[in-house]
Every structure is written in C-alpha cells, then in structure tokens.
Amino acid sequence: MLAVIFLIAGLVLPFLLERASSISHRRAHVFVVMLAGLGLAIHAAIDGVALLDEHLATAIIVHRLPVGMAIWWSVRPSFGTPAATGVFVVIVIATTLAWLLGPDFADFAETRGLAWFQAFVAGSLVHVVAFGVSHEHDSQVEPAASFRDWGYRVGILAGLFILFNG
Image (cartoon, rainbow, N blue to C red; front, side):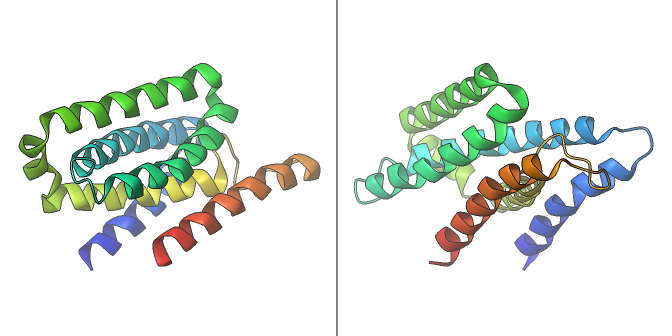
C-alpha cells in the first residue's frame, strides 16, 4: 500500500513543481526526466541481477523492448537523438555492471526503500509519458500536433497498463 502512495506522489510532483511560481513547466519536467533517468538506471541494474537467473533472462530481455521504445519516444522528441542515445548507454552500463557484480548487488536490489523510490519514479514516468516534457497544461496547442503527440503517448500508457495487469 505504501508503494501506491509513492506512485501517486511521483505522479503529482510534476504538477506541484509546475505550480511553483519560480519554476517553469519545462524546468520542472527536465527535473522529473532526470529523476526518471536515475530510476531507469536503477531498474536496469535490477534487471542486470535478474539476468543471472537463466529462467528469467528471456523475460527480462523481452521486458526491455517496450521500455526502450518508451524511452526513445519520450526523450528523443524533447532532447534529441544524442540525449536518447545517452540514456540507452547509461542503461546498458547499469545493467552490465549489476550483472557483473551479481549477488553483491542483489541485496541492494531487494530493499524496501528502493522499491518505494521505484514506485515514485514510475509515477513520474507516467506523468512524463502522458504529458510530454515541454507541455503546458493550460496553453493552446495546435490540434494536429496535439493529436500526433497524444497518439503515441496513449499507446505507451495502454501498453504499460496491459504489461502490468496482464
């Protein structure tokens, strides 16, 4: 139950940051994207430990495909191809290091605090995927651009829902 509270807090944080008069929408979302990047690196490291189990290896690899697509479609449009590629490099390094460290990293991966942090980051990721990095909640958006952006975001959110509830 506490993880759900952290998930909701992660979803609400970007709205609160945007409402702070001294922080722009874009700066708030850049902060959330950086936080999400840290969470993704930690998640990739946990996946690296799971790769040690030969029964889980295929599931972990298949699981990384939609995650990679979500990263690409969320980071590249706002920050460019070099930034998206950089995120992939960090994730590959985190996964590889955890795989190499193996059991030594496994104890860290099983802590409750880390699970709560991951839930918080998941909420932040849902916000970023749903609204993008440079959106304005209250501004007028060109209809064609809005439809194009929302199409892939709805697809990502639907895929995440199916993945976690399937």
